[in-house]
Length: 372
Image (cartoon, rainbow, N blue to C red; front, side, top):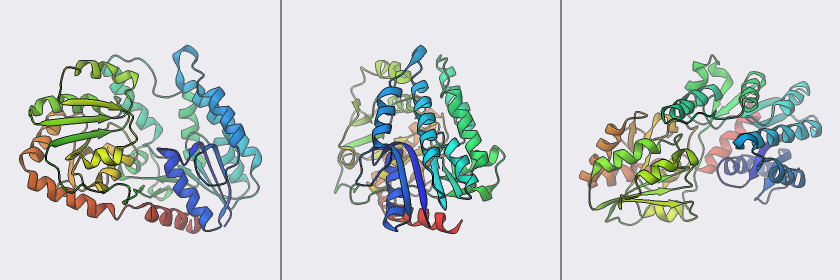
């Protein structure tokens, strides 16, 4: 099997670049990777387009006409896609990331390849509806993404043989939009269970949120829920860059000494080890990598179905409804008032994490490329 893998991102970098690295690495390890295309390369893998990709990142990403940063990303994705389309040489399998591969996908289809589109979030129109509803609720009049990005996603879904998805939530979003379950291949993401490990003990009740501090991630429901908890001996760590749409929330809670906005950090494993519970009330995800990392860190988890978490409600933590401050507060109190129960859930989470390693993800990914 000769496979082409393409992503307009930093292969080996954080987020989707980390997911793509593990998938491309698995193909390369099996001598099945014909060519890997990416715009940047933080890995040891051989990547085509590094110079061209670097120029795209430097020239297009900062381009923000009319205050629209998504415009530069749309241009970058389109130019990257056209480059890849012109380089393809009869692959058996083509794997491209959603919103970045329409032209190359069409060429691969004409060459007779089995084509996969990786969609790490919900269906683009479901994502748009969910997130823009939060924007409008808070007086933000702007689209989630450039219209071209939405168009590319939808066209790619229709033309791909299969869509690789990470969670039940994403699967349901596609089914709700009329897709057949047979076109959807569900492979959960993974975690490094050596990098993320439980702490020996924890004395202070400390909740932690990790991710972009934004309306999409549900921070607007976590902060008031935490304020409702009202415990003098507890604290909330908010780890991640604060997006412009959530800056007003940081200002609103600036005087609450129990809430610490830490910004972007490189010591997330250690911060999770120092915490008692992971809280992630996201409005829309695919399957957030931080939910796997929290499991491996032995933390009971409070998250939403929309976060794409693989915990079982009542076993490794709690699944709460989206946009529900009262239920988040209740679950925080449950874990605060019942430390033995919290510890048991954390132990369950650590055990469950062994079912979601990157080795398992890579095995299922390669098996999918070979069998479909």
